[in-house]
Structures are given as structure tokens and as C-alpha cells.
Image 1 (cartoon, rainbow, N blue to C red):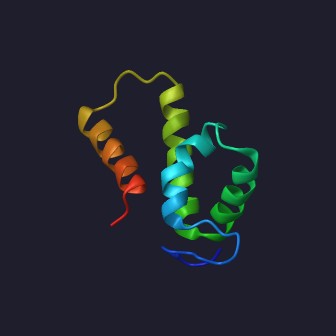
Image 2 (cartoon, rainbow, N blue to C red):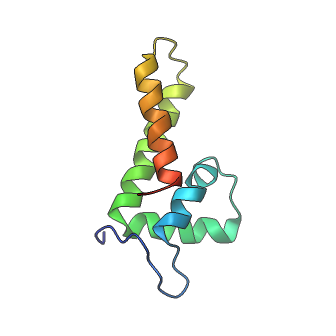
Length: 89
């Protein structure tokens, strides 16, 4: 994996910002097939975005497990995490 590259601009590459804005659709299998291939490549190459995707996958699996005992503070932190992905620094 390459180190975090906030504004990747190589030919055909997605920027980290674009990935952050579209990652939820990608993880929900709702993105365009052509975009999916580019997203998968970016997530494999970019350590930061790959880690973000893994965290979101784990959150999704946990929520799908039907846990009802989530601490409201944890939910707030998760919400903030996702918002930060959409609007990085």
C-alpha cells in the first residue's frame, strides 16, 4: 500500500476525497460497476482509505448483528467519523 495521498490525481485514479464521498455506496454494492473497479484499486493502494473502508465494513457488520445495547456516545462518534470521511480536513 502507498502512504495516504489526500489528493491523488494520476490518470484514471480517484482522489481520496471522491472515495470518501462515495465509499458508503461502494460498500453497499450500489455504485456504478465502472466506479467499483476504480474504488477497489484505490482502496488497495491507499492505506488511509483502505483503513476507512475496513472500519466502515466492521461497523456495518456490527450493526447488521442487531446489537441493541449501543452506547449513544459511541453512535455519535461513529456518526462523526462518517461525516469526517465525507468532508475531510
